[in-house]
Every structure is written in structure tokens, then in C-alpha cells.
Length: 313
Ligand SMILES: [Zn+2]
Image: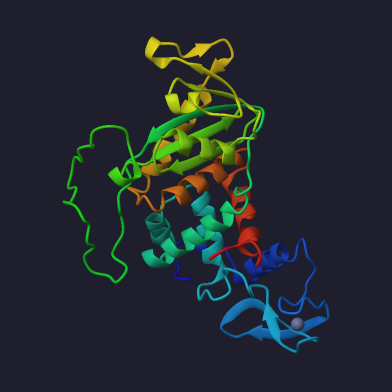
């Protein structure tokens, strides 16, 4: 690691590898990742990777290490980079910021960020809310940020936006570069944030079936797509009549969540609509483990990244 400060030197390769070894084999005892045999023995070290121990399986007679078959297996950077990148990601830094702090290329940190975000998403894939749930929607401008696949100038298929993008008339839609975001906030604590193409009855019904258990109590505003929902006990407040709370019926938690999502998304300085679900999914993960600090959140992501069955590249 290029030495930028004395703080960086406090991270030694040996300590990091010992920590990763503990995380990888915490829930399953040391075994061969190929044949699952427990008959393994030490088999030296790597001269180009200080701290990393090598093992040999007596069953299939092949060697492996703590990183075999995981996201981090082929990485040429030392583990110090990965640990710091995961920590900075939990502070919701952009990939450009992480590249600057670690001294790696922007493309490297961008790739790592998505790998780690996807690893974190494995915690959130099955989440369904129950009890009393509040819902609200937001339209967010998300265009086609990023370069063309083959490099060079990207064909936009429209006039460049330049500054001061004029919004197209009517409600937001994926095709108008303004997809909708629906937040489902349970009063028990957990949330589900979804990016959807539009805000029609069919879309909202599908989103609700995924996010909220049937039979739950649902509090929303008076949008007609919510009123047509089937399978829930539904009550709403009428914002056009300046009604924001009627006893227990309100959606202020959902509105509050949007006031936090907006600054979170602003950090990335405009996002592509293809990436919007990924960013929101990671926000959902961060918010659902909000009682833990960034170090503890990073400790949740790393085991998922080190689990060969869970992490997806
Ligand atoms: Zn084996």
C-alpha cells in the first residue's frame, strides 16, 4: 500500500489476514472448498501475499487459501484495501471518494463498491414487512449516466440534457428518465425501498405483494394507486385537504425516510436509472442495520462477501 499517512501503516497484512481467516471459517470449520473434506493441513505461504496462509486438502490433493472461491479471491490488492473500502462504503461514500482515500483507480473502486453492495443485498432479498406499514412515493431523476460499453461517446438517443433539465410534463416514468421510488416503512422498524418503472395500479400491487405481507395494515396518502390495492387493511390521509395525520393514521415515517434518501443519493452526483435499484437496496440495508455503527455494518458485509454460496459477482 502506498504510504499516505501513518494511520495507514497501523493496518498490518498479518492482522488483516488473521481477521479474514476468522470471518471465513467462523460458522463452518476449516474445510476444502472443492470437496468439502475436513482433512486439510498447512502448506506454506505466498511470497507475493504476506500474511496469507496456504492449505492442502488430503482428499483432492489440491491447495487453497482463506480467499478461495470468494469475491476477494483474484484481487491483486492487499486485504487492507478491502477492509477500508467496506468501511468507507458503510459511511455511504461514493466510489470516487473511496478511490481517492485508498489510492486506487476509480474503475477499481467502482467495481469493488458494486461487489460489496451486492454482497450486502443478500441480507435484504427476502425481507417482507408485517404489522402496521406506511408507504409513500417519490420521483427521482435518473438518466443514463456512464460510458458506452465499447468506450467512446455514448449514443443518447435524445438531445443532451445540459444544465437545468426541464422535466417532462406529467407523472414520472422510467422512460422519461424519472422512475418512481416507493418506500414501505414498518412501524416496528424495518423498511423496504423499491425502484419501480411507473406508479400504476398494477405496478404498485406487485411492489406491495413483494414488500408487505398480505393482511397487514397499510397507511398511505390518497393516491389512487394505493386505494386500489387488494389484500390489505388500508387507510389514508388526504393531503389535498391539508390532512396530514388523523389519530394513528399518518405516513410521516415514510416522508421522513425520503428526507434521508435524498441526501444519500445526492452524494453520487446523478445516477443511472439501471443502477437505481442497487443504490436503494444498499440504502435499505444500511437503514435496517442503523442501530449498528459503520464498523459493525462492515463486519456484516465482509462475511457475506467471503461466503462462496451467497455473494454474487
Ligand atoms: Zn479437497
